[in-house]
Image (cartoon, rainbow, N blue to C red; front, side, top):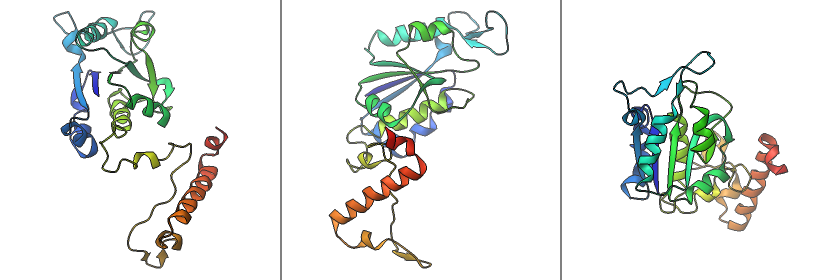
Length: 225
């Protein structure tokens, strides 16, 4: 997989990809991630990428021209499955969306900034609008890191245990059950006996029942789906 991220501030994105699972995935050649500075695609001497909104109002708007220039440059050497714009009013990111993106070969992610992008970018240049929650960030870089993490960990061979991602919360519309590790007794707080019984079928039953109970308590809307 290759992920190209268009951003005004590539320095905000480097750190998440230099440690832990994302770094290992890149070193193992499971994914390639490239950052593209939007200012490199501005045609004027000042490298302006934003301007005042037509009709007045507070804030600045990212211009369509440098974004289009960057996308055209990228598309000369690659066919992209999705061009994703990160925005608070996009489709809410969930596990099913991350699963779907993880099966693609090439993705472009556009990080918004200021008051967002010229609407014509959204109307004509992108294929998906994604939000990571009902709140506003200063820019799309943090959201891009979140989206990439949720996708890359699902690529086969990235996690040490292939089944690990399959037991995550939301994979089967349930929250993950409680997990415990050694010691089995700490300050009198004991691990449920079933987990140390060695009875795998019973353990599986317990985990499923705990997942249903937890989901019913915290996210009952998932059970309705």
